Length: 134
Image (cartoon, rainbow, N blue to C red):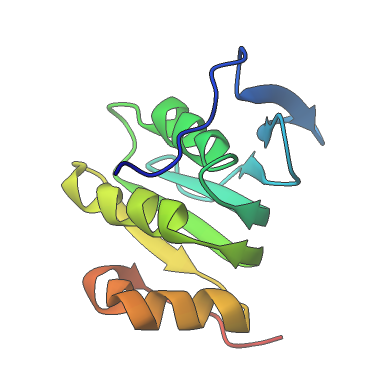
């Protein structure tokens, strides 16, 4: 038995501009990934917010595909705004390990996301540099 896949009813994400910067929003749900300027030109920073599951994680995948350019050496993924994530989010985060860029999770993490990463062992497998300041 295979997991349910989102039905193919056209584009799964929409590209927006938020404060002049690109942002990817899932067609369904409230998942949003915003690209924000970084101090270092070799760094890309993505701010995630909302709920990430099989129906919405595509906006993260598309954002990662866009920011991965030859000049980018590291990608910061700010998960502080993620209220919910499931195995689709874990899979997408784990997939970053196979990429040439270094991916670093920053936060602070919400309780649900921290528990998800702990239960799946993902926290130990990824680079995490959390900002614990609220």
